[in-house]
Image 1: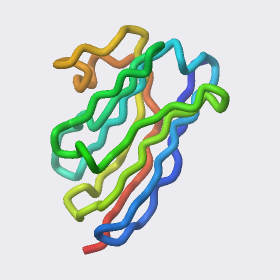
Image 2: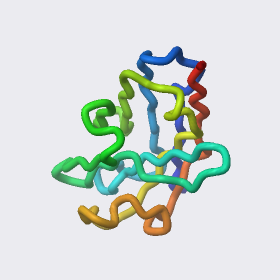
Image 3: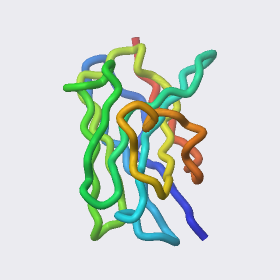
Length: 127
C-alpha cells in the first residue's frame, strides 16, 4: 500500500529555517513525481515545489524560488523540503503528494493530478 508520511513541521521564528521530510513506503520514490503543497487557513491549496521521477528535475513556485529547496534521498526513500528565511505568510499545513507521470512546467502545481497524499504537517510561523 502506497503511503506518504510528512514530518519536520513546527513553530519557527520569522526568518528561521525548517526542513520537512516526506517518507514513502509501499513504493519506490524514484519512480514517482513528488510534490509539496501548502494550504493556509481560508486559502486554496497551492503547489510549492516538485521533484520529477527519474532525472530529479525540480520545479518551484515563484514565491519560494531561492528560499526553498527540494531534494530526494533514494536510499532513504524520502523527499525533503528545505525552507529558509520563513516569513509569517508562509505559515500553512504542508503536504506531500505522489503521481506516476512526469511533471509539466505548467501543471506540476495542480493538486488534482496527484494520486496519493500524506496527512500533512503544520508549519506555524510566529509573528
